[in-house]
Length: 85
Image (cartoon, rainbow, N blue to C red):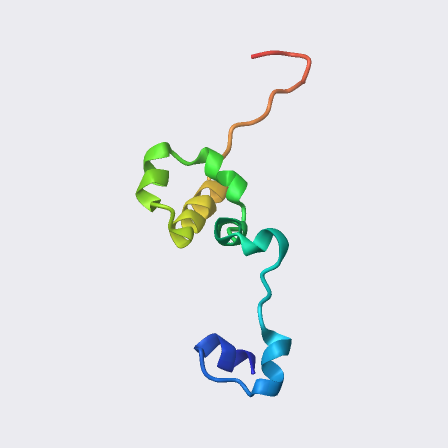
């Protein structure tokens, strides 16, 4: 049945209610739904502004940017929170 759903084919009506993706609460908002599904979205902080603008809000492009940022080396945090840089 999952294969039929993934391929967009019809599913028997008695099973459709069990497998429907329900968008409730915050997920009812289209932007929250779309951007909430991007794994590691916090890594977008390490992506250049130009690359983000080129993505033009495409969630698949943003996912690739976040994956690339996640796989790259990140700056190390300070050795102590008492010291300032």
